[in-house]
Length: 325
Image 1 (cartoon, helix red, strand yellow):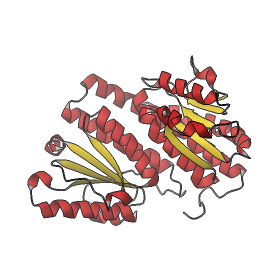
Image 2 (image 1 turned 30 degrees about the vertical axis):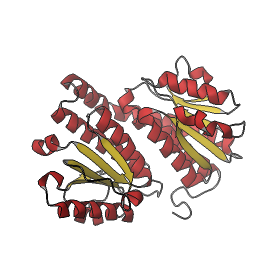
Image 3 (image 1 turned 180 degrees about the horizontal axis):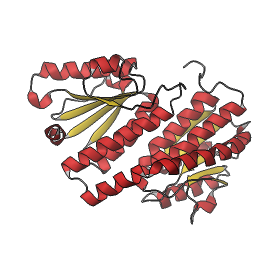
């Protein structure tokens, strides 16, 4: 419905855990590509401190299983708040992104984007994270087309590059399966890891850290690369690897500069990047194909997922059923 998309002036996204990281990439796309002010909230926080109601707002709930209690409760609360307001400008406009349409959220919300990734076996979601990202690319493209925030040429270029990705990503999985298995041996005695990213790849740094924590039980933290010097740099020494996502684009030089700051503190530096001028700074390069910066999260997440998997497997841990989750 074109009128529906045209009427939206603001977007709020509610999610938890891995779904929140997908939502953060989605927020970047919806703001920077589609031109719509977008805010992402932890569902558990939204329930107790929701933002003031704004008119013509789209609320998006993201949950892999469709059963995440905090996300369901937050969406319910937002719908009731808006219905009680009794003003058409403030009416609830709600979309859910889920991998399980036949779930609580499917019964609660009529507008569903079905991730359609098949049953997610691993608790630490991987393929469904990727599917959630694709859902947000679809939304961002639709909004950009209707809002005319990008030229037809720019939109068609993104669509064309998205459709050409599958064989590139398949090769990337094969390459990094071998690389990650080899690199995992170097993490036998590691206690802490720092992940760095900027722009559209900052949420990927957060997701890489979350995957490592969830399945290998190594403490890991993700930061915007430019924030490392404002505190986290104090943690760095030879025993703390720094994994830096440096994809070609407007923040590439900045990320390399931040990596140099880590290198000066004797940190073991792992780069997630296509090989190019500047990447010789890394002690170990996990190579990426050269793709458009808009699409880079779809590539940069794969080495991080595989590395977490192989580190956990090397430690003899159950990667599908992490403890306490």
